[in-house]
Length: 205
Image 1: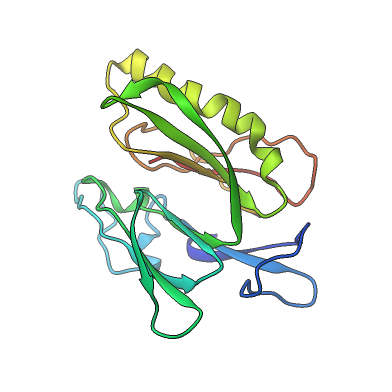
Image 2 (image 1 turned 30 degrees about the vertical axis):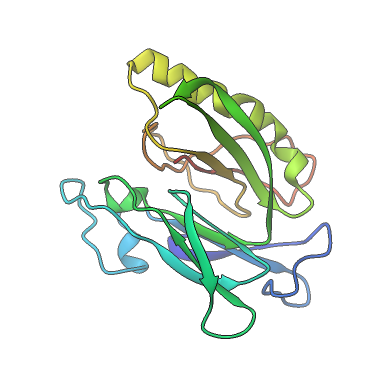
C-alpha cells in the first residue's frame, strides 16, 4: 500500500450513497507516502533536503469527507452536480512523505488539548468510517495527552491548529518517527471490538 490507494471494508451501518462499493465491500481512500512514494501521487522530489509548502485541493462527492494535514480553508461547488471542491490551508515547509490526505464516509469523536497553543486549546479528533467512531475512544483519550507531553518534553509548542487521527482499514505498515509539529503516520492499537478496524493512521497536523 503506497501512494494514493484505496482500502476495502465491510460497512456496519448504511453508508453514503456515493461511497464506492461492490457486492461485498465498500472503499475509502488515503495516502501512504513514507518514505519515497509521494511521487506515485504527484510529481515530486522525495528527498529530505528538498522541502516545500503544499496547497492541497480535492474534488469529492458532496456526501463524503476529505481530510488533510491542515484545516479546511473553503468548500465550493464542484465541476458537476453532486461534487464539491475542498481546499485546505497551506502546510508548513516539509518533506513530501509528510503530506497526506484521505477521502471517505467518515465520522469522528472529539476532545481538546489541556494546554493552550497560541492561546487556544487544540481540537483533537479521531475519524473512522461510519458506525465505528466509538472504537476511537481509547485513541482520543490519549492523543491530546501525547501532544501536550511532547510539547512539554521538547519545550516546543505544537504549532499547527489541529490534530486528526484516522482509522484506515487494511493499513499494515509501521513507521517509527514522531514529529509532533508535522503530519506523520503511525500504527495505534484499537481494541478488537470489530475485525474491520485493524489500525489507526494518525494524521497529526
